[in-house]
Length: 123
Length: 111
Image (cartoon, rainbow over all chains, first blue to last red):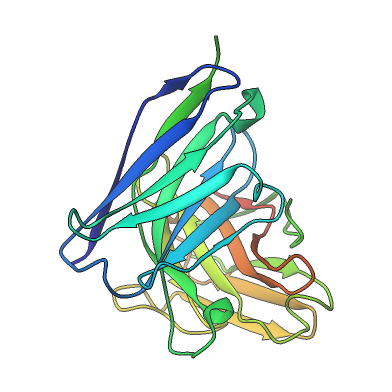
């Protein structure tokens, strides 16, 4: 059974870089698409971006200029980096696996999720 | 950035049937992209309830069902139970935004 666990600092200062890691256990990261999602307090879910096991990425246009998602197959982990953070980036951050039967990723669902980690942006 | 609209809340007594709508537009649901549904409970990992409009993953009770028509989709919960009290989100893809998109979320309350 595949499990995902987010880790990283719970507090980040404004203008600095938010860095989170998602560790995958019970399965290999060398297949599937892997994605990050966030939920600001009192608000809905927002998709941040994904990385494929090949290394290809795609980001939400609203965050694209500040986001990098990378893969470390040796550690079975993938990571999120969000630069120049502000209070608006305060949220619960989730990692998840994207999967589906179609050749096209945009039909895929997020079938396995981590429990989420809270990140607060504050000085 | 939600482009899919859901009712903020729905409620029902135990045993009743409730439905949650998810309304989109021409660049997402109507464009043919699949709709998926998730259940969020505080402190737990979000759970995939329905994928590909109307398919249940293994382990999801058949009380949960999904449908899609035109520019909208729906999640139905029959035989409502106390453990179904949670937040529910639909999700699809938007071709104009080139992004996965979520609904605004619906809180289900069991009376």
